[in-house]
Image 1 (spheres, helix red, strand yellow):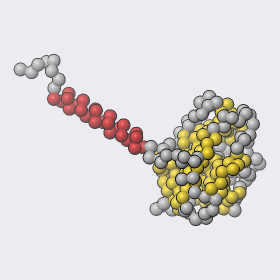
Image 2: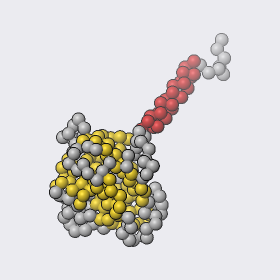
Image 3: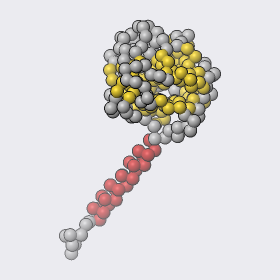
Image 4: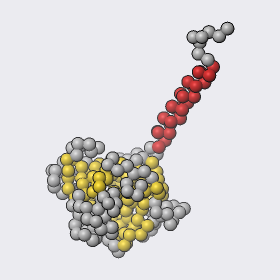
Length: 241
């Protein structure tokens, strides 16, 4: 006769299954952060030493193309990853072919490991944030851009002022990859460039790679938006891999 207070074999199997699922899910969460460590020589800009309502001290704005100058300034932001300040691009000019960007005043390198935390706020044509690297001038550079409006991350080269899609390794005609880019939430975009090979990460997960040899030499690094995107940035990190 079975003791009514004794657990059944089915109950033991159910508990074991739950425990296994917890272990598997925990392992998956750990594995999702597959980005390498930040370089030990990295330069970090948190914007917390800059005065609010002023342009950032360590970055220089470039010409966005159409629509006049962009508006880059330091804002008070209690929810920023390194409070109390972040940097914002505030202009919301509704021109699609408009590329506000700002680059570090002193960091110059060819092989780079660059990351930034960003939060897209508004935008009708786009809600994006990007990393600029191997920047020669306002018309010649690489950019990897994440869009919360389109839910994708894609790579481009701006050559003589004209943006060209760089595709994905093995799928050169693809416009980056589709992935969830959370609006009004902090995300982390990262680019690691070595020679002609570039890796792209979002929130610790590698999304894709691409190859290009248009700009092999050293250049500045920075961040960017597109069109009428109003975006906040924090914890800009640049080093050599």
